[in-house]
Image 1 (cartoon, one colour):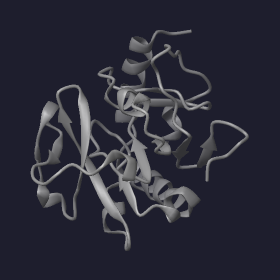
Image 2 (cartoon, rainbow, N blue to C red; image 1 turned 45 degrees about the vertical axis):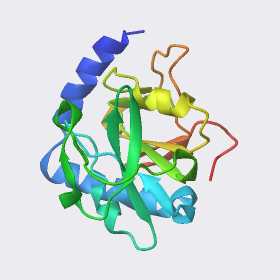
Image 3 (cartoon, rainbow, N blue to C red; image 1 turned 180 degrees about the horizontal axis):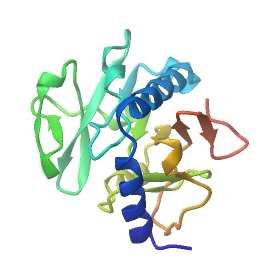
Image 4 (spheres, helix red, strand yellow; image 1 turned 90 degrees about the vertical axis):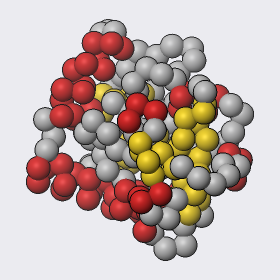
Length: 187
């Protein structure tokens, strides 16, 4: 099996090739699957990410009625989440990624759903991110927030290498569907 570093590099190149109308169409299909997902329909609060480096853009979810969107802000080696009503509330933060600037962090245990970015995911919920471990630490932290990985089919692999500290998401959403990591589907 290839190393995480090699997979990360090849998947970043692959993801960058998804562009134009193909990317817009795929993102629209991903959003349709998310909005149909019982986990999302039940959620009152959900944690988003700001898309960078070709990640699937979920920002249209920000306007969904009856829901509070949260965005991460890096604090030391952890992520805190803050309610955001408009992208105007975000300013460049760590790694140049837009982050909330003001307010108090939202209690982690009150978050109903966590969207997890990644470069690649596999069928059992493992992911390869950028290698900093922020989301792994968050998911290890004793919260029971259902976690949904999001990626394009082109970056969805059968199996990824995983270390003992790598946390799995409950399901992965791509443009062709929702893939749960076990037969005991979390919905």
